[in-house]
Image 1 (cartoon, rainbow, N blue to C red):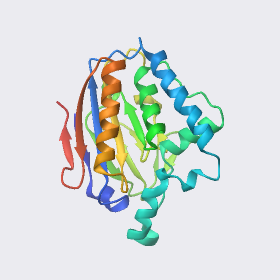
Image 2: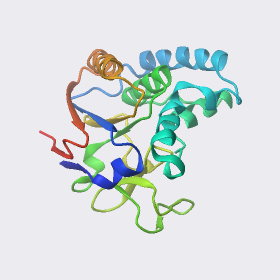
Image 3: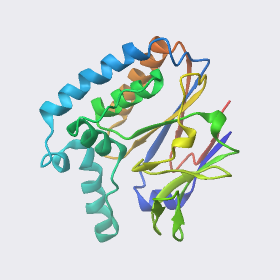
Image 4: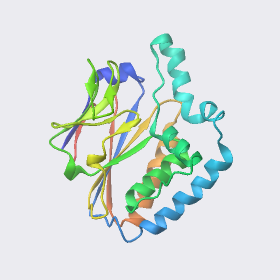
Length: 230
């Protein structure tokens, strides 16, 4: 599978955007789902103590958009991210735990570091994957549509998600029997390289420990706009 990001994405989000991909193979996605769920439950407790409706917008997860605002002015826009959705789900006492180890780990790390993370089953992706900007209105499903200027990603058959994960197709989500996963992490300033390494290292370690999977890491940015998974 080839993964490509178009130059328009950097113009729309931020020139220093990094998309980090963790390609997981030969993983066990079932036997330690409960142990991974325990981690997720613990970080949910921290979120409940830390956040309330008025503080979400003041937290670190929104800092990239204030940076973009200073650089791009009125052209900058704030995307509702998957992290914000997760936090709101925690506040509403919505069940976040799943039967899949990898999804529980991804949600745990996303909430711990307040960064957008998503996971797909590559076997459910048709052809190559591309990250792009909508040039005209596109419908993602019965109740969702994307507007001109929205950042999204797709394979050769369908739209899979809208960055930074405020909408995601359920059709490519991992199942308990899934053996391979593609995780992507969206990082914008002021997230530093040191923090990036810390997040990727912890997530890799968790996957190796809980899923017994092999992890390969790839990065897309302005200097490297495409990569082919091995």
